[in-house]
Length: 209
Image (cartoon, rainbow, N blue to C red; front, top):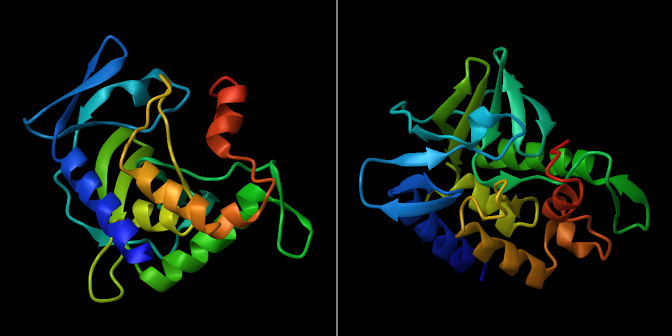
């Protein structure tokens, strides 16, 4: 079930990201032309604009990466954000299997670091938001086939399908993986008091962290 979920969601992602996203009155329309994608929803205007995808090759995940959150890390003085995924937020609490209250964002980072170590992903720059901030997509490299890293994390219950500032899914296919993880109570979904980060952000009016 896990593999079929990743395959279905990953196939959708591949098709989705091979199309062009054009902002039209706050929404996106898709046409089959050279790839244009939206960067992740952020507080500044730069990240809500449409930009051309980089032609850079996939490179190994940086060993020196310092995680700011489960979906963002810093390496070489630049901040990298994994496209289309939203991690649990620091400062929100979740009850673990031992009945202990944990910081959901910190727990998310610990598990993401372990998955990164095990799956040895490679990443490709999608766009530069500015000289210090980059949006990337990544793929796992362990095992017989590669998987979209964001899909893998969401299907395991360690990430969520992100939304833009119009309340639309950034990558609609990621909802397939999230629904599967929720049904299986995988990862963070095992907790009955999971503070879903998208809901928290909506309640906070879009203030990410």
